[in-house]
Image (cartoon, rainbow, N blue to C red):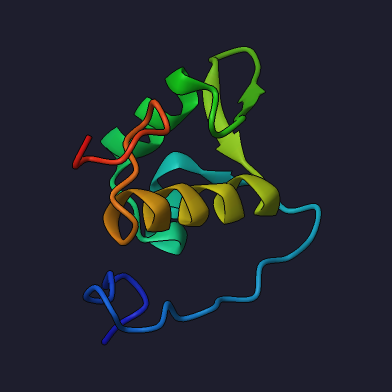
Length: 91
């Protein structure tokens, strides 16, 4: 498994040490969190992840807390079956 692979369900997520105070681009954040760029943007739109907006271009940057939240949301979505509204898929 490489740094960029998303582990199959049931396998532990590899932990990467993030530098406190560092910021990461959308592309790098997607790789670090194991989440697609599209899903990250959906999580931002839903208010589940807060990006840092870089001026003057409005590009999103993410800190270690945002990447941790991405991992948590993705875990709840894929493993626990929770959708973005906080409901189980089976409901």
